[in-house]
Length: 309
Ligand code: ATP
Ligand code: MG
Ligand code: MG
Image 1 (cartoon, rainbow, N blue to C red):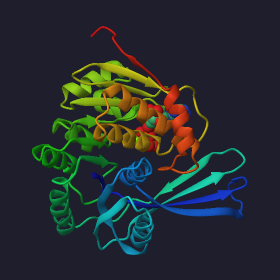
Image 2 (cartoon, protein in one colour):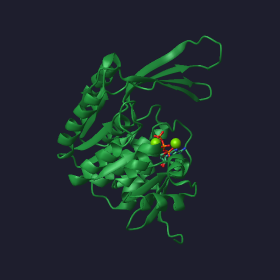
Image 3 (spheres, rainbow, N blue to C red):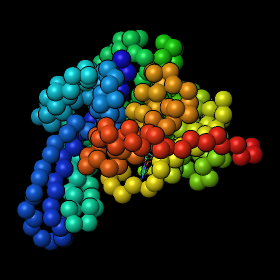
């Protein structure tokens, strides 16, 4: 199984309205609720790709129960969320059906108590040993130490289990120094880490900081990957209009899927680009249409990238 870690789980609520106007009252045409938080998006995409997943992290309160009820409906996903006293946060997206634009409101999430963090570490330590790979995704909730991901990376590495890190800011900086197998920053996260928006220079810098492989996601331009074996660009066949929220999480799922299926790097990158581009066309994060994915997979272009060092 693949282990996903979502410390900042959420209940994602989406309202659709015909047209969003300030100071106006709106009739909601549709409302949906889904498990959210980056690692749970990854878990849902992995499940749809046919992998068995164990999802850990935190869940609490009525909102946490809604998240867990929905996870129970996905047969490939085992729920290993650790209970907390505070309520799981809600994220609220309001979609304007006329423009397709989304307005997003994100609650900060509950404070995690030291005893809750210790309980999580115990669960994580047990699960890592039976995992084929681990994904550490998203921001840290209040109360969790800033070096949390560095610690989780070290645990996975000493168990000999490949670990992928997708976060930002100081947790990313410290996590990279703990030598994860893969990091998947987007352009902004990479620039914050390295001080450079020049993707090739920045990915190389991120490797020097400790990551074995750096896979930078560059929105509609696809992925730039650098590891000890080489350097590749993987690009979708075209820029897709749609909902890019969670595209990075789908890319992470594609990379892990290719890793546990032992695909060579170019094929892993192609899978990651195809599933992430397909998810841009889907209405919600963590979802994609299988046929669209398969069509895109045939048309993703992966090229070795051999610019001078
Ligand atoms: P998030 O954190 O919201 O999930 P991100 O900012 O980490 O996303 P992006 O770089 O925006 O990640 O997107 C991840 C991948 O999704 C890209 O590498 C690309 O393969 C695909 N993608 C994103 N936007 C588009 C687009 N407009 N058209 C085609 N593919 C896209
Ligand atoms: Mg983005
Ligand atoms: Mg991201």
